[in-house]
Length: 162
Length: 429
Ligand SMILES: Cc1cc2nc3c(=O)[nH]c(=O)nc-3n(C[C@H](O)[C@H](O)[C@H](O)COP(=O)(O)OP(=O)(O)OC[C@H]3O[C@@H](n4cnc5c(N)ncnc54)[C@H](O)[C@@H]3O)c2cc1C
Ligand code: SF4
Ligand code: SF4
Image (cartoon, rainbow over all chains, first blue to last red; front, side, top):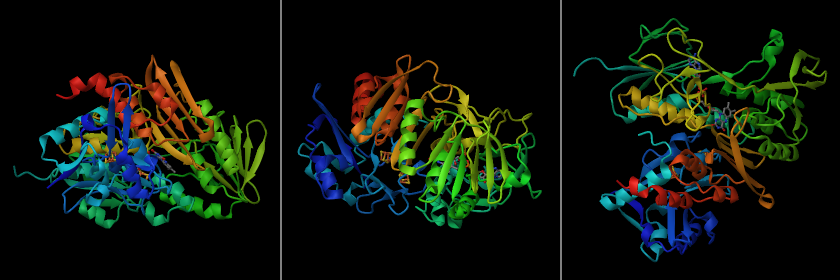
């Protein structure tokens, strides 16, 4: 098992339920600005693009954190890879904010970096997405893998040194 | 294949060196790795020293490694040893204790040291403070506890962060600045003025712009700093931040080409086979301007170190080039600078688009060259710095939503979208 959070851009309607549930889960308030998933809606061409941390392999944020506060762990139950921030080590320098090409890690009001933690193994955004645009599924799914790669290639193209 | 294990020597024990070692080990080979550093201690983060000065983190939190980390990485440590001579022809490194290390591949990751102020008597020179190492930080912290008036020479990133860390009620900090603005390497004049006003207002720091130091002398309680125009100021502590100079005295320029730093190609190789360089000591291609220059920042040191390490371990990876970039927070005001931003004399040929939102104290400026975004400065709200960076770095590939970026925080989706429409057909394959 090796689960990933997969996004199907075509199915997203831009309803922002994921953002509300995410901020509620992590901060106890329905405030999209504090969510760790963000959906950009393009009214003009009727497209909505949800963006959330892809728990990168060899993550940019982890590679450059100057206080060694970011590490990757694999959840035992789901085999999901999670890139996580140790709040005790983070100094809030925002270097990770500069390094992540997707804006998926932010320094919050508490002065500490915040990012998607897959809700410990059962992401609420997935539970509440009314259209099934967000799914928590096996990465072996070739389609999922391809879509993730595409998303990374498009937004990333950052340090495509490998 | 039986043969002996390849010997890799890593010179330095900081951002570039550690990234290289991790990259080497990520390939799973059985190379014998030796790390040499002139400092006795385990690797630490110079970036965090100002947090330590401010009392935000205790000293132990500066460290990135402990003895176990090196054991886990299976590296042999030679700490407290300075490289004195690199004989690239014989593939041999000489250390200050007379040890010779033979290598199959070597990485120069010796970083840089603060540029020293010249023309002073030895005793005065020895009393000045510079900030780079953990030892420097300990000294500044000790002296700052008793200081009442501190003179900081320079207004670059390290100087300002140091000034901000030292300033507190009862301690007056004066920054003496050669140029007419703060952060002249990172910001254009207009953004610099916003940052200056904030620092003056919030931190009570005094700036003397357009002044150069003529002489520094001892005085009863401390130092007398004489400025070129005849002005003088007294300080019981002087901190100098006049930029950095790469640590490459052990390199023979007859063997390995050097300019401002050690010259490297896009695989981080120096002019000599099997000798690599990465981090603040290396001079390579700027990804945005194309210039061959020393780009000295933590992120770049990590990324260069990583690519050098992979290549030393047998991979063939190219480095896309360095990006001048920095993010800092001064008295609560975050400032990010990415790419070519018209700082110093690099402003030629750049145009800019500006957006601001005074009530939220946000200000942002995007710099363009022939219509293509090449840099950005974000003040106040830097949450989208990474997205803006990615957009600039891939600017030639598609439409960067310039207006969206200067108007306010942009989401990755917006950049993604413009990329989807311009390059999806080619990227899917
Ligand atoms: C106070 C401060 C704040 C900073 N803030 C930021 C920031 O916010 N953002 C940012 O991007 N960057 C920042 N920097 C810059 C950043 O720290 C450097 O870019 C980074 O450390 C470069 O890493 P490096 O591995 O190239 O070299 P260094 O960190 O300079 O390390 C060099 C290593 O080589 C060793 N060494 C040197 N010479 C020899 C020799 N002859 N023999 C053996 N060993 C040797 C040293 O002991 C050390 O281990 C800051 C720096 C300072 C000092
Ligand atoms: S925060 Fe960004 S860089 Fe870090 S793992 Fe997530 S997507 Fe990757
Ligand atoms: S903000 Fe925290 S997690 Fe991000 S780079 Fe700085 S110390 Fe690391």
